Length: 303
Image (cartoon, rainbow, N blue to C red; front, side, top):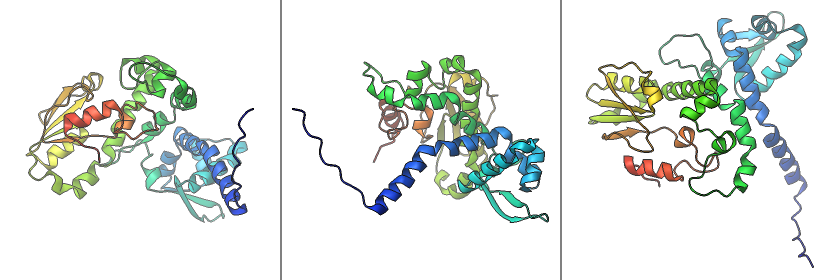
C-alpha cells in the first residue's frame, strides 16, 4: 500500500493573498527584463536624452517613428518601466500629456554620447537578455537531472555546446560574443571614477596591481594615471588582448585567470559568476572549483 502523503498546511487568507501576489510577480517578472530589452532596442533612453531628458508620450513616439496604432502599447511599456525603476514620471506638458524622465538607471543606457565617466550599458543589457541566455535558463531543470562525469558544464555550455569567452562562443553567435565582450567592458568601466574618488586610500603604498579580465585596460589606465607609482597589469583572454593597442602605461598579458595570474601586490577581480559560470546562477561565485583555484592563486579567501 502506497504511503499516504503528509497533510499540507493551509495558509491563512492573508498569507494566501500574499502568496498569490508573489506568484504573479515571480512568474511574470521576465516581462520586466524583456521590457528593458525592448526599450534599449527601440533606443528610448537615447531618444529621451536628445529630447532634453524629459518628454511626453506623443513626442517620444514621434522621435521613435512608432505607428499611431501602437501608441497605447508604448504608454503601457513606459508605465511598466517607470514602475520597475527604469524611467521616472511626473508632471505634464501644456497639452496635459504625462511627462517621462530619464533617471540614473536610464541615463547609463544612453548611446552616442562621448563624456568622461559615461559608459553606455546597452551591450550589457542586450547580451544578458539575448535568446541564447534565455534558452539556457529554460534548460536549467533538464540540466539538474543530468549526471555527468568530470567537470560539470554550465547550463549555457550544456544547451549550446559552447562556452562563453572562448572560440566556441564566437562560432555559436559572433554578434552575441561581441555583445558579451563589449557589455562586460562597459560594466567594468562604469564605476572607475567612483573608485578613484571614494577608494583613493586603497592605493596608498601599493606598488603593483593586476586587473583580471581587464579588457581594453581603461580601468587600469585610470588607476595608473591617478596613481603613477602603481605598476598596472591587465590579464585577459588572447582574443581580447590582441585587439588592444599597446602603450607604455599598462602591461598587457594574454592568458586565462583560471590557469595563472600575474603576480602583484593586489589583484582586481570581477564577479566570477559573470565571468565563467560553472553552476549557472544557483551557487555562490566562490563555491565552484575554478573560483576556489583563482582565490588560492591570488590569496583571496572566502569567509
